[in-house]
Length: 184
Image 1 (cartoon, rainbow, N blue to C red):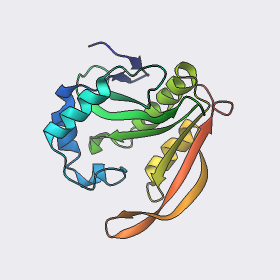
Image 2 (tube, helix red, strand yellow):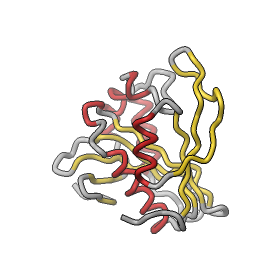
Image 3 (cartoon, rainbow, N blue to C red):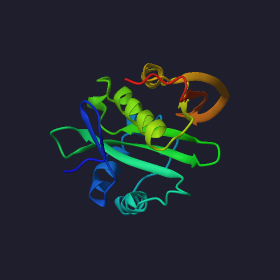
Image 4 (cartoon, helix red, strand yellow):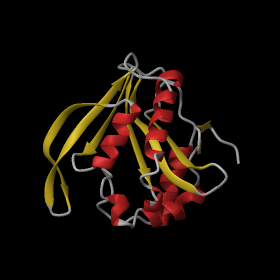
C-alpha cells in the first residue's frame, strides 16, 4: 500500500470506497459520533461510499476547499480514522482541521496528537496556509489536550453552541498560526 503522507506510527492516503464499511460501522458507535460535528443521523454504507468517492478525487489547485485523508497504523492496511482540512481559503490562507478516530480501543495512545502534527505540517509546508483552526466540544478534554500538545491555542468559546445527549454544551475555538507553530 502506498501512502500520501507518513508520520512516526501512521500512514495517510486518499479515502477509498473500500473503507466505507469500516467508517459506516464506526459511525454507528455513539462514543465515536459524540464529539463529531456530524453524526446526529444514521449513516449508510452507500452514502459513505459516495462521500469517500467524492473526497478521493484530486482537488483543483486553485479552488480546492477540502483535503481529506484516511489514516491507519503502519503495518496494517486497516483504517483507523479520517482527518481533513476543510473550507480551505486561498485568499485568506486558512482552513478548518478535523479528525476522528473510529476505534475507541485506540484512544489515549497519542494518535490524535500525531495526526494533528502531521496535518499541521502538511497545511503549513505544502498548502502554504497561514492559520489552521478547529472547533471542539468544551467537554472533550482528551481532544483539547491533544490539540494543545500539537500547538493549537484556545481562542474563544461559543456558549451553549452544541446540543449533545440532551443538553447544550459550549464549543471551544482553537487555532495555530504558521509563525507560532513548533515544527517537530
